[in-house]
Length: 271
Image (cartoon, rainbow, N blue to C red; front, side, top):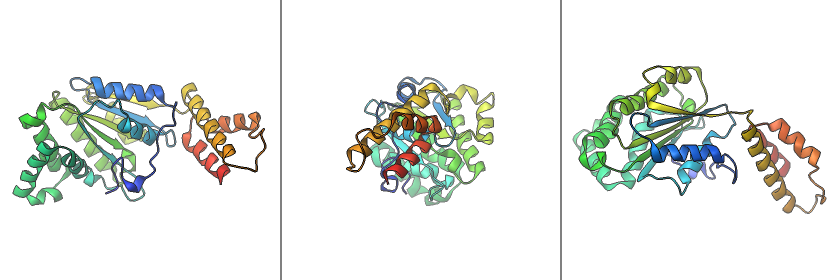
């Protein structure tokens, strides 16, 4: 509960500020629209604070998202870090949106109620692979997006790798699958090592969010200026010259490409 993109537990969720991360969002949306063959996973990777969750949220909410259905798991160390619940969380959301999928899942769980307490591998087989690969009405369905954000915040590294292994197996073994995956994480060593394996390389594309890129710095500065302008418009106690240009530059240079730094700074200033 609370892991969905529109959950009240995440309200308001992080989103890309208008006019920022445009190239990254375009690439992710293009990938979802045009994926083909085995390469059905896009790994959005970057350091803490670069705005990966905002990118994932904005992709899911985009009016240009060309999918028939989608599910999302936004992991968080603040109470949503149990990776063993990932598959049933995805399945629940898909069942709520797709009647034919729901009917298949109802039959599976009625026949075997212990499925909801089974291993992740068995749940993945029965709730993901069997319906979308071996069921004619779903195998021919339009593309379905599954977004997993903050994989590194799942509390057990073994669970993180097991989930990646299952997804990669699906992409490689069943290239006709309608499922496409967006997975965001920090570049933790075990995750990076997994994606570096030669047999996994054919199943994914990498979207790296750099901190010290010109694009990132320009986006953060745009965000800072917009937020400072709103603070100024809402206050009666600042002068018409506020903020001084040199102060804006100082703040932008300190933030670099880190949206988390910029957001923390403007919330402090606003308060």
